[in-house]
Image (tube, rainbow, N blue to C red; front, side, top):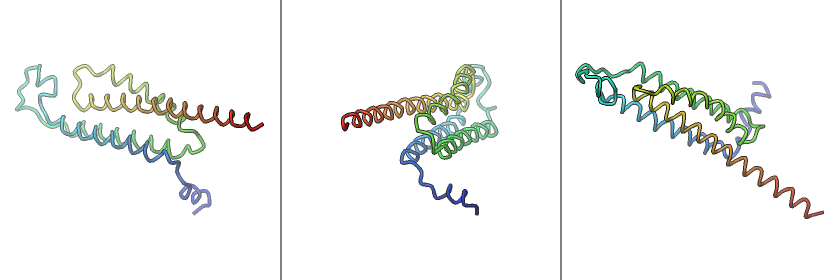
Amino acid sequence: MSPHRLRFITRASPPWRFPVVATIATGALWVAYRIVTTSAVPGAYYRYAVGGEPASSFSYPVVSVTVYLVLIALEVAGLDYWFRNRSDRPLWYKSLVAGGTLAPLSVWETVTLMHSPPYSGYHAMWIVLLNAFLIVLGVASGAAALTFAVRKRLARERSR
């Protein structure tokens, strides 16, 4: 094993990494649970609730639900990778870049929601809430970093 790889494995992660990733993963698990359970109800689909198709012709959309669950898992894995491998960047930078990257997907998911199935609606809700969480986290950690820098500078000026 190369020394660079060994250093990567043994490097301690920042103290904020676990709570941030755990919050994102918990939200993803809740959304996955809601997708699986709500997608089994025929009344949650437009064509059965309003469109006039009989509920007896309903079949569970296994492929579509699986695609959305894999998408959510990939989003969580991508965010975990982003937060884990950019250790030289501050939290506010990572959060704002991740939120800005997910913003177009958030807008697109929200715009295309009309008469969509429940798994698509829950994914759109997940993306919007994840985007909001990342932006709020970025702004809050940026404000904390700015406050810390100002305090440090004031303390240095007082000690002169």
